[in-house]
Length: 156
Image (cartoon, rainbow, N blue to C red; front, side, top):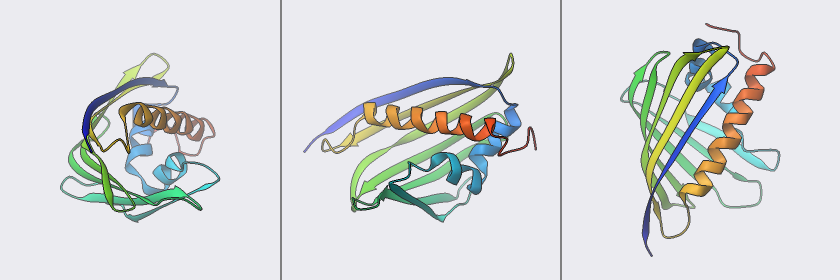
């Protein structure tokens, strides 16, 4: 039993306007599309309330494996600029991660530069920053594909 501290810090440039990238975070259908872990996994939101002081609750996991519960409590939402939230992750009821995530958006040549910083505690060897980094990278690539497919209009 132990606790590790870690940070994930990813900067990615998208060929889409800031408003489209922000909307991909702020809309349930968009998050469902790019946040889905893959064909052998299941994911559904029990609650999606993208509002300061509110929380999202999402269950996901492999079809025949453990169930993960992710809860995000929104601390700050500044449209087209910044999202800050407290996050917890549980595996089969056991806390595996607790931390904060801050996502910032800025215009960049040809699109938007987005930076994601997750600072957290990873519990009992069941989770670690490297795994979260790999997961975030995969989800951000999925977001990029989602946006390139024209799944969300440019701007709002």
